[in-house]
Every structure is written in structure tokens, then in C-alpha cells.
Length: 84
Length: 421
Image (cartoon, rainbow over all chains, first blue to last red):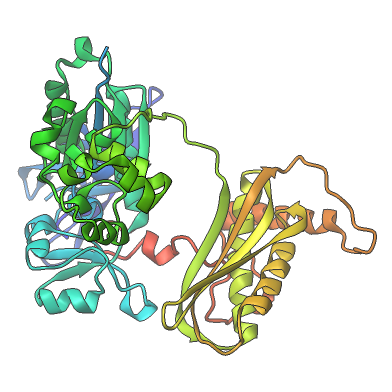
């Protein structure tokens, strides 16, 4: 499986909008690092295989470099997925 | 105005849904639809048959209903995956939701098939062919799986059209096309012509749907009785049934279970009946109905099927009562020796649970207490899960306390990583 579930800290505002704030990712040495999420932007909603998911585009700063990432929120399972 | 009916059928439904989920949600790179693959049960639990297969598997000779062992003989490299019914229900619901965006009149025919009455929607979605392509492409793009759409002026012809070449295609079969597109087909392809009817028709020298359409109706009536009329009408493309948006009321509730081992002891058979009664009665109580008739069915080790039924003194949905009736039927039907492979309980003549109970002078059971206990157990199971409370007899027992229906492991298999629900 290429899409990995990840830990994400999120805020929900009064209007029900979702804003991912921090994400925890594993590096190549299997060490966990927490990154701040910058400029999260709601991309679109997917319903593949009847599974509702909200896709967000954002970036993190990894070793001083800006790295674009895409994360998905699965409404059925309440899980966050790092899209490969 | 001529009616426009669509028949929409998901291509290799279970396999397509698995493939779409694994690719789009779990991020797998391999598309199960493009390799020899199949969804199948568990051989150890004697559920080992093929439920759906990919087109490459079909080309290797794998057929739906084959045992997994036979399928592997035809296609040694076959990739088999276990079923995942929660996902299939979710996909089916999403599929029906999209259909309802196109028409208010949708009849769900099965988990992966539906009819849509598209009469009068031309101004919204264009001509029938245009609308069918829009519908088909929307399902593919939004849900990730493909469907076939059959278009005609009645349900029968739409279904026949939907079964033409697959996958991801739209076909029409209007009455003026019957002679060209439907009559040359083998008679076994006609809806409701099963294996036995097909051979009876062969004996009459009827090999194609066209042959059947041109046969004298009196001959068909003489051989098949009332069914002869249906066969004749269908072969000529006549079907007056309408698309029923509302599901008809349920006439019976039943559950059966293939047992992982052969049962040759009465106490074990009674225990299995109890676990089936639990499931059936929970469903009856959930719908606030009671049953007048209880039946049991037995399939023995040699696949011989037998059944027996009785009418209750008073209709009920109390587990103990249904179980008692089922045990009485078992004693009357079974010789106590022939190994049993499959047991089932079915209830019928359903009435609302508000009906008044006829009391028996010699019956000392307190039915109010029994019903109150069952209702309380249902509430506990609803809130804390179906395994939160069970009869002591099932503790440390290989027989699951609520048999029948779709087991939990088939609903939510472990994908070995990614999302585990």
C-alpha cells in the first residue's frame, strides 16, 4: 500500500472548515519528526469507491527546504493519508 | 410519449470496487481489473467460491460460482482476494446516489444493478444516448469504476442491452432493433431462462431467442404452463412492468449458514439453529414485525436440499419461541445421522408487531418478559456491539452466537497496511 496514514493536528472553525496545522512523518531512518503545515489549501473532494475524502495541498519545511505534500482526510475512517 | 428506461450494471462489481478502493484510496499501483484476479471466499470455511472475476481471468476460463480450487486449475496464477462487504455497500450506495441525480425514479435491482426511468429528461441531459454516456462517465470519473448502460423502452430490453459487450459501454435495444440484435442470441441468454428451461427448449428445437419468438404460443403453454406466456412475451421484447422507485414490503426474514464442519449431532444442530434464530429475530424486532410461519432448511453433505415449515399458534419475534419451533421442525425433518452442511431458518406471513397476541390457556410462558429481555439485549448490542452480550452456551464455543448474513471478517478484512477500518 502506498498511501500511508499519518498523524495530523487539525483545527475546525465555526463554519466547519478544516485546517491542518501539524503533521508527523517518519524519515528514512524511521525517526518521527513533527512539521508545521504551511499554506494548506483545500483542493477537491473525492468519492472514489464510495469513500469520501477531502484532498489538501500544502507544504512543510524539511531541512530548510520547502516540500510540497498532499494529504487526504477520509470521512468514513477519520484518518489522514499522505498521498504518494 | 415513449418510455426511456436505462439499465445500469457495474462491470465485475466486487472486483471493480476492490480495484478502485485499492488504487484510489490505498494507493496501490496495480489494477486488479487488468490481471487475472478474482474475489472469492475462504476455502477453510467452505465459502470457497468465486464471487467476481476480472476479464483476463474470465478469458482463462474462470467462471463466477466456480470453487477456488477449480479456478486455480484453469488459471494457476489467479490472484484471489477476500470479500469486503462494507466497501461494497458503500460503493453501491454511492452508485445509486449518482443515478438519483439523473432521475427521481430509480429501482435498485441488486447490489450492482439498477433501472432508471429517464422518460422526459431530454431537456435536462439530452438525448438518451448522450445522457447514458454522461451517466457512465460520471460514475467512472467520480467513483473510479465502470458500468454498462442498456437503453430501451422497457426494463426487459434495457437489461438485455446492458448485458451486451462489456465493459464501460452503452448499448441500445429498442423494439425495432430486436430482430437484428436480440433474436440471433442463444435462447439461454434470455432473462429468466435458466439451465433447466434452456434444455427443455433445446428438446423442442428452439435454440435462439428468435426461434422462441416465432414459436406458437399454444405449444409453449402446453409445455411450460403459465411460464410459456412469459417466455413468449420476453422473446418478443414485451414487458409492461414499471420502474418501482419504492422497495416492495418484505415478505419474509431468513438467514442460513454454511457450517465449517459437517454436523451429525442434534445438540450442535440445535445450537446452530439458536444462533440463526438470534439473527433472524433481531431483524424482525428491528423492523417491528412478527412472523406467523417458521421454516427450516437443511443442505446435507451431498448437497441434497430439504425444508419443512409450521404455522405458529400466535405470531412472534421472540428468539426462544422461534428457536423452539425450529428445533421441533429439525426433529421432524432430520434423521439425526446424515451430516449437515448448511442450516437455515426462514420466517414468513409477516404482520406488524402491534397485532394482539392470542393467549393459550395451557401456556405458562411469560411472553411479555421474554420480549422485554430480547428488546433489552438488542439495545445493548446496538450500543456496545453485537458481541457485547451473548448466551452462555456460546462462550468458548466455535459456533458464532449470531450466525447467518455477512460475517464480520467478510465485512472488514485486514488489508495488511494502509487504511484498516
